[in-house]
Structures are given as C-alpha cells and as structure tokens.
Amino acid sequence: MYRLLLVLVLILVVSCEKEFVPKPKAYLSLNYPTVPYKKLEVKRPYIFDVSTNATVKKLPKNWLKVAYPSLKASIDITYRPVNNNLKELLIEAEKLVFEHAIKADQISSNNFENTKNNVYGTLYDIAGNSASQVQFHVTDSTNHFLKASLFFKTKPNYDSILPAVDYLKKDMVRIMESLQWQK
Image (cartoon, rainbow, N blue to C red; front, side):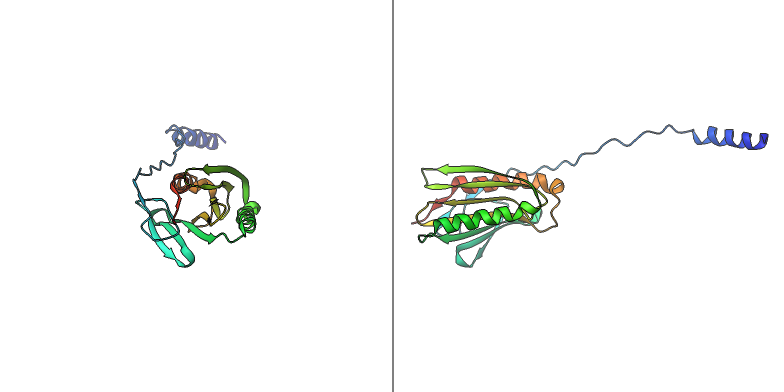
C-alpha cells in the first residue's frame, strides 16, 4: 500500500515539472495590396475602371469575366440591352439574388445613383455560405442593363473568405461608380 502511494506521489512530482501554458490565440492577417485601376480595354457598350491585378476575359453577348487568379475569384458581368423589358430584367436580377436566400444568413441592399453618367442600380451584400456574396445590377433604364456577381472557385465558407469578399467588394463598387455607357 505504501509502495503504491509512494509511486503515485512520485508520478505527481515528476509529471508536474513543467507548468502548463495554453497557446495564445492566433489571428489570420491578410494584407491585400492597394493597386491602381485602369479603364476597361475591351470594346463593349459600357466602360469602367478595373483593377490592374485582375485579368479580363471577353465572353459572348458583351459579357465579361474579371478574374482574380491569386484569390481564386471572379466578377462575372452580364449585359443585356433594354428593349421595353426593363421590368423583366429587374425581376430576373432580383430573383438571382434571392435564390441565395436558402444559404444566406442575411441579404442587404444599397441603392446606387450616378446621375452624371445616367447609372442607377442596387448593390446586394449576401452574408453566409452562399455561392455569391456580392451582386449588383445597374441600368440607364432605356438602353442598357448590366449585372455583376462575385464568385469564388471554392466551397463557400463565409468566415474564411470574408476578407477577400470585402477586398473585392471595393472593386465592385469602383465598377459601379466608374461605369459609363458607350454610345
């Protein structure tokens, strides 16, 4: 009995040699570069500023893919002419946004207006694990309608991609602010 007690005390003394210190919390620090913008060099019925760290891929029907290879993301831009169908185009754009409601925690919208360039629209923030976290549509209400959606080439995990979403949202706002319709 004494031997067992002696062994237990010896184990306690030897095992308590090091003081336990929990690991400190680590935070991911992502620093995205501030890069200049340039005018879109692709001939389309619209023009806007695009980040110099993005590559622009021409698609049929005056559509574009603004790709960010280092972030595995893209802003997909669709263009449709307005032919007495503005109401249908707006309904379709909002339907595409609210299809994400199944996975989204919240969808908020901000109206946009640039009377100088005749550009009017709405920017949508989609919080949660949806396929697209930011979308917008803009129009001049008579001739042009443009829709843009942010996509990542990865399974959506909102907490992980949030810094990249915030970074690319600034580029999407810049697209809206600099957008001009071509004659």
